[in-house]
Image 1 (cartoon, rainbow, N blue to C red):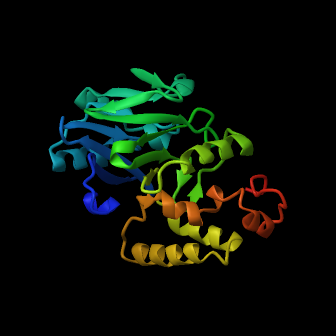
Image 2: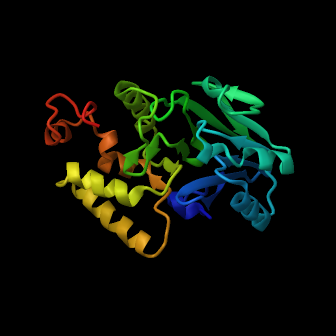
Image 3: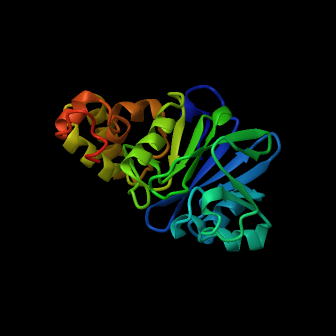
Length: 255
């Protein structure tokens, strides 16, 4: 469970539970404490989500899908059958996510109780991928667009589309916490160090990641302001990084 210590001494309006699923997925439970409303983000499978909900005594009324891949939606049907949740996801993936009650696009809002999340269209990993930012909770649910120290594989988009998506997310406030779809941070750090070996901030973060993983702790969430300094995929327009990967103008094409 993420207490108010996750973002300093300011209490979080949202209670966020991280639920490991499959081999390396993260599902998120979001509770808005004033109303008690609960949402589930990207249920890869239903069983661990159901166990976490029962342990907290929470009942979800909403499921949010960031994109259509099975490891983000395969728990939808079972949770909807049990809890009667509504399902919301990207408009442009309506044909690939069965049973959506609401679809959203750039600039739309997703409401959980009294908390409103802003929808960003972030194509690249998939054509219709969305990310959702809850400014009141300093929380970004980035699916497989942005990982801690990395980004998702570019299955359906172009480098330019993916870079535009990442630019949207890196422009969010420093204290935004990144809640991403997978525990890939350790391997992401190794790649980042291979292309940006002199980045002191990156080296410090990589050491902390090794410590956490050695203790079996998650590396997610992470602060966007820190990731912006160390994640090469958020720094593809930095001349020093571009030079290090042999791209004199920018590193977008290289990645």
